[in-house]
Image (tube, rainbow, N blue to C red; front, top):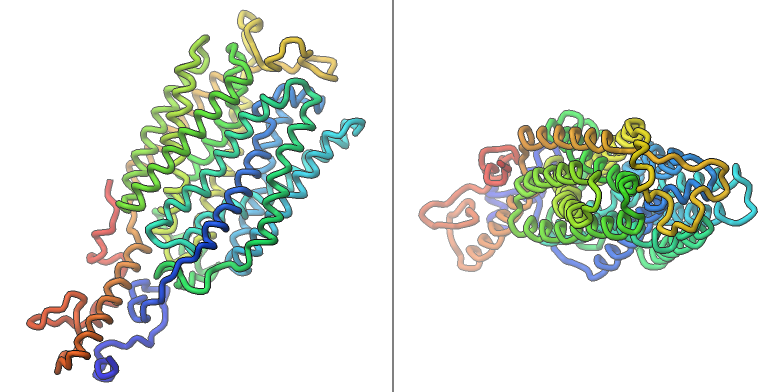
Length: 535
């Protein structure tokens, strides 16, 4: 092998050059190893994401009862979720930088303890004899701290998958961690209506939701000891990412990335709006909190988890991320249309539950698949930066959708006032708690039409315009060919093969190929077309 090097056949001393990721071939293939620790880190991250999403959506399934407890308007209760998005945008920019410069472990430590303290503050806000102003200020402070933590947690799945998992498990790992977000939503949709029968039960609900936050902070502190493994699980995991600001510059000039930014971020925002308004959309038409929260929320999330796992397994095996994403988006928007036109019809429990299950089944896979598309489209930009900005797009669009949709809501018509179930499934409980006036009930039919229109618009953009080259996958294929070449060269040296200057990965003694031509293959080259996505 040394003789081959001395003849100038191939120089393995060159380092990684970000401007031409194809030149990764110039570096000797890294030693690949996977560690069982990766599953523990994935488990802890999943617990934290689940807990954070539970806290964010906790008041949504019992919005009118929560408004009674805190003696405030329903719009203020909606702000408990909106505040996550408001603080999440500046926090997300900070999170991308911290995760890039300081590492995964310290990002998880910071976010877990922020969320833990926020959860404790929410519990304190519900303590009896706390004044109205103090109670509302304390619960908002708790939401702000958890909202600051959310981007750190939501940016982490792609980072954990890239640093700790081999290439045939990355989409699955991403799906498991990302699915914890809707699982948390489902848990809150189930537990909140079950626990909260009267306004005074809000304290019990918040104590229950604080438990996994405390557990997650303890597990991170005790069990996550390093940001990345000693040996990489894949060839791309060893690659040093772009410096932060250089990565931002490359993202700004990447047209396909901006389509993901708009369309996948829009999918996140739409899903967020549906989960926030689900109870408020259904209860004016005679559907109780239990049906809206437990039944529909469970169908929405369980359908999503099943769909996400199926899509993740298929994507890992076929690598057809774009095709699977487009199909998911198309059928998800069809399911949103189904829900839009059936939700305000009375006694349609089965059809409404089915529509929620279909929205989850086709909608949830967009999150992990979108993360994988982001990395493939922007490689070697730091994954926390590229995927994190898409999540921030989802936060921004979700916040705007919630603000606009609640403005479009109208008072329920008098003829429907007697059928509403918007306060509690227990009719013996006064709907207003300590308030002197009832919380007004709103018809969100126009809001649901607007949500569907926006969903169809960004779906059409994604289906028609999005095309991308799988840059990370191309680089890994090039490194695989490099490894095959090195093995072939070792075999030939052992057999004392003479004047062969360079050996191709599929060596033919009658048709030797100079391997030095292979590094010049760019990830956007014609030789990479096999990994170019087409719908």
